[in-house]
Amino acid sequence: MSLPRYRIHRTPSAAAPDWARAERLTNFTFPWEPTPPPSTEFRALWDGETLFFRFDCVDHDIVLGPGELPMDRVLVSDRVEIFLAPSLELKPYFCLEMSPNGDVLDYRATHYREFERDWTCPGLVVEAAITAPRYCVSGSLPMATLRALDVLKPGAQEFYAGVFRGEFSHAADGSPRPGWMAWVDPQTERPDFHVPTAFGVFELVD
Image (cartoon, rainbow, N blue to C red):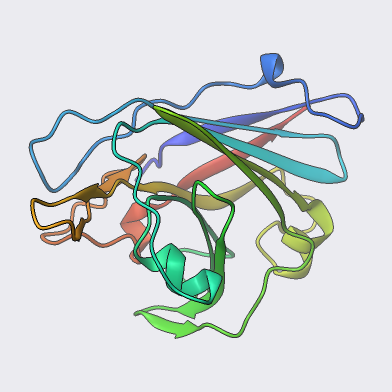
């Protein structure tokens, strides 16, 4: 089966990535509900040493969860997510979940839904900004980390990845109501990103 692909172009090595060079990934949907999706744009670049990424999201009801720990806040917040996998067996795979205020929940997992919450992604850097009605989450990850995790194989120019958005809103009683958006429709009966069918392919382009 042919998987959806996203091409990551090279940017000149510099303090800031040239986002004008990046392809715009915008075809996010709500696979499990008939709701018009708010604008969501993902872009990525690389410079040989670093993978850069950026999400730009329209959100008229930004939800930021309570809690003392970032991981607790992320779980009940609006967020964007990147999953990375050495293979579609998902044994293991790696999850980066990031909220509009820069909180991060990163963990290693094994299919099906066996989570190691004490794992942290080496070298991950995340920045976030809210400019209502939008928020932006950007960051970087060393290419060396992708290789060390076996996500990027020796000599390879592509790897498996999933890109998602948790689009929360406030219910009438003020409680957070989750909505789940994906680049690739996982084709599951219930909302679930932790399956092989939620992944596509990221291709590094020179």
